[in-house]
Amino acid sequence: MAVRIGIIGAGNIGSVHASQFSQLRDACEITAITDLYVPLAEQRAAEFGIPGVPESPEALIQSPNVDAVIIGVPNQYHAELAVRAIEAGKHVLLEKPMGINAAAAKQILKASQASDKVVMIGHQMRWESVPMQIKEQIDRGELGRIYTAKTGWFRRKGIPGWGTWFTRMDQSGGGPLIDIGVHMLDLALYLMGNPKPVSVFGSTYAEFGPKRKGIGTWGKPNWSGVYDVEDLATAMIKMEDGSTLTLEVSWAVHMDTDNTPFVHLMGTEGGASYRGATGKLLTEKFDKPLETPLSRPENDESERLRLSRHFIDCILTGKRPITSALTGYTNNLVLDAIYESSRTGHEVKLDWNL
Image (cartoon, rainbow, N blue to C red; front, side, top):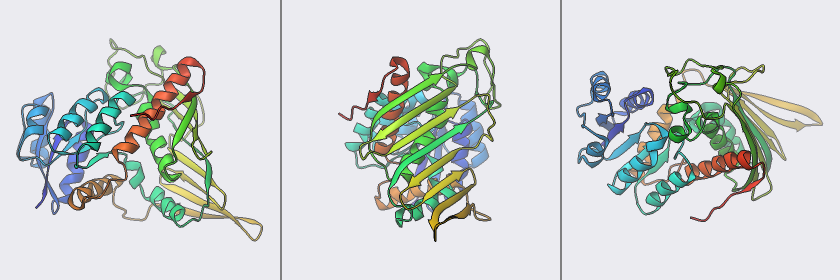
């Protein structure tokens, strides 16, 4: 029986999910879509041949024609909708970040632990071709022990939707750190083997947004709105096993950058670098440096499609998703600690008590 999917949020991300899951018609069908602005949901329904447009998220969650709920709405609503969907017996695919903060993410994690349903976070970068190739080599032991890593994403002029929910702390939870930084944190921790973070020292800066500089092309600005988030963040994260991770991200910065996400992994037997659609494996043979280039295969399917297929596969087989609720909570816990460290000027030890 095909998995019946309902989508909450008919904006850009909702449209992406509708497009990807529409390509998996042998395993699933999209039966419903809704949005606070119902005409937009009706438009998406017409575009993708979705038969149902419930009048509210609650109506979609309670629908007997929906087995799995995809949530693609502003961060402040993630926990409320995810918990309601889980408690209603639905599988959940939740856009990143898992929660607006760690407290919200903890609500989702607890609901997930009390349920037998699949709860998955939409970190699509784990399904990009080059990181997948790197992970395969890591799992084979080619890098040895990864003792330190560096990751980040510098956008030179990329503040999204100035004055909208993107730039309001009470609605988004933060700026580039929680927006794109969460992707890089998630990917780096995954490639490092999911070590347990134990302490953080970090700083955040707002040097562009308050001056209405560094504006990007994503979203429509609301010049009567609010900008009270950072536009650059940097942090050092220490793990229980002694390894470290450096994280640096920006929406806007004066530097020479190609606006491409990156991860550099340093292991005892080899290293790996990922930068957008390309990468390298690095080691030493016969006392000489050796590099193996990596790239996206020709005609490679999209990472979003692989993510979507993984979600459906987990539902049908009972497998645990690789971007589980626990990984989402871990990311939120680290992000909260970075913001707190920036506020206090001190190292912050992570509290893992649930």
